[in-house]
Length: 124
Image (cartoon, rainbow, N blue to C red; front, top):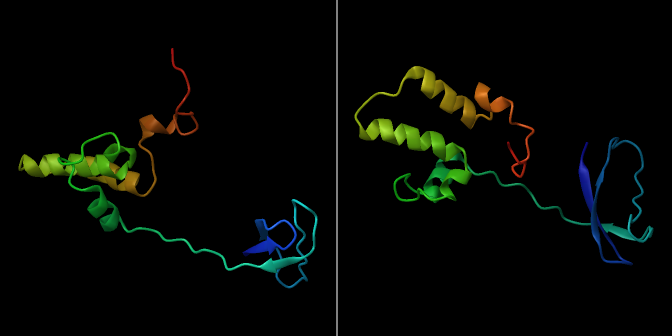
């Protein structure tokens, strides 16, 4: 199901349309002014950074330990890995597994209850 972008010639607004069936004729209409005078626009593409690029841009945990650094949850596991390395100790396998799972988007069990909680929620 592709998403096509069109520009309305009457109101100059850009809008996206999800086309569920590409074999059927699709005639877009402007959802703002109702015009049928639209032309197809060139869509932007997504660019995803690799984990190494994110780390390179974030810097070392010791040099960027401010609030912005920890807004990216991948850096929390990186900080723990660096601490173990600095102490010359091997990180426990269970902790390594949890960090890897978090990097893949799996929250640790104690945090799963908080998935749907708003950051502005007040707690008693």
